[in-house]
Length: 334
Image (tube, rainbow, N blue to C red; front, top):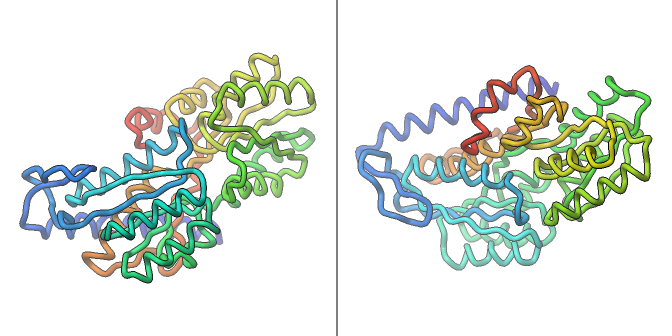
C-alpha cells in the first residue's frame, strides 16, 4: 500500500510539472518577478505578476534546511512573476502573528507550516475563511484541513522514522539507538523518533537545543560517554548530524550515524562513510510545490492531491545514489 501511494505521489508531481509548463507557455506576456517585488524581467511568464504570496515557517535560527525550502519557493515564484515574501518564527504565538500580518496585508495566498498547530491553525483558518487560499507544507500532515487548506506537501514523518528503525533493526538487532530531538515540542520531530522506536524498540530520546550547536555536540558527547551501549545515533536534521559526528569522534564512540534531511556536508559524509544514510523529505520540492499549488489554484482552479497529502518523502540517500545527488546539494536543490 505504501509503495502504491509513493507512485501516486510521483505521478501527481509529474502532472503538476506538466501543467505548470503548459500554463506558462500560454502566457503572451514577458517577465518574472523576484522575491521582494522587483520588476519583471523580459522573456518570462508573468501570469502571477499581480499576485503576492506570503510563506510563513517555524524556521529555527542557523538551520540550513530552510535554505532549500526558500530556494524552491523562489524558483517557483520567479517562474510566474509572483511576488514572494518570507517570514519565520519558531514560537507558536509569534508565528500566528505573522499569519495575521499576512491577512492584514491582503496577500493573494499563504503557504504555512504547522509545527505549532494549536497556535497557528485558528489564524490560518481565519485567512481561508476570508478568501485567502492557504497551502500547508512541511509540517501539519494530520492537521492541514483544520487550517482551511485543501493541500499539503511534505513527508510522512512517522513512516520516515519507521524506515530508519526497521533498517537499524535489520543491521543491529541487539543494539541500542539514541534519537536526538533538537526542538522541544515539535510534533513532527516527536513523530520521527516515535517512528524510529516503533521500528527498533530499544530507542532512547535525547533532547538538545538545536540553536546552539556547540551545546548539541557536548550533550551528545556526554551521553555517549555515559552510556557505551549506544550503537546507533539518529539525528533529525543535517546540522545535528554533523555535531553528532564530532561528538562521536571526541568520545571515541563507534556508533553508526543515521540522519533525517540533507545538506552538502551531510551528503559528503554519506559519501565518506561517516553517515550510513539520510532520510530526505526533499525540502526544495516542498517550497516549490507550495508556491506552485497556490498559483495553480488561483489561476486555474486546481487542487492537488485528491484530498490527500502529497508526499515529498521519505527519500533514502545512501551510498547507492549519493554520486548522483551530491552535486545538487551545492545549490540548495537537495
